Image (cartoon, rainbow, N blue to C red; front, side, top):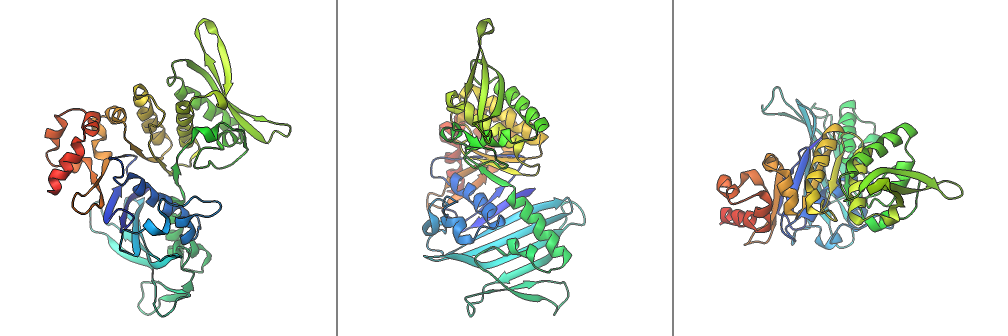
Length: 415
């Protein structure tokens, strides 16, 4: 699993670290840096998936640009940003992947990249570090980047010229390198490729969709993905969907399912059966479902479809959801995330979500906030706030958030 992400000179941040737990909640006022934090994860996923660095930032015909594009990707006046990912392989081994990107008006490319293996003799001991590869741009050569792969034996390092427009990690698999390097690169790539930044848009989910294997980031093809599952898995997923959706609306949902439509049966539609008093039932399709129902259904589906070991990222988790259903959402995230071995990161403004999270979630809440003097964004763990017991005595988590008491406490620390 990905344990933490550190980013430097990234958008509104000077330097910050996001610690990733089985369920991580990011809170903060508007323009505090929550979305910028999630963009780091999206950027890493695009690089690991083989997307060119410039395209990963500015987008292309198939990709939407990151917010701000080239102009705002670096914290001004810097022309570089750095991202460091710490990925756990086992209790005694981790990988540290670091990449620095140079940005100008027309393109972005690698300035430096490194993959290091960290080995621990015992838990909490200092690690032994072994550089698997290291690369740094040479000013004298604008067309290629010299890459050095450490062999652990002085004088035997390889120099290979590679394309700076794509991260070296995504190119390593195609090279004839030592098994240790190949294994490390493949493992880190697999974890970064399993980052899924999900923002289901109900209006996009109401249409017929073709059969698909992978879920789109906006949830638009959810009917096609569910309908395309093998029959046994499809039935199990639809049964679980029905189970979790039963308590959401005022009416009872008896069943949720998808089925092929059209002359050639290559498209699909999402349906549900509503139950009313006197055993009256009514079938409707996605066009008649509420925004909140569709978003909730999409989130449950994503947790059931994503591969074990994935990192699911959802912005504004509570959009379209009534505050009285916040506990259902939190219970679902915790239960399905644990059952399917999927880590989850969510952002929220909703006090009801924080109240539903409860005191036990304190160690897993990160606060995004801005420094009053410099204006840079920061990430702080909620449990690291000084005088936390006194703060908690002022009210519930939801009240602390809605009244701005958390940000006030952080400002007192900085002062």
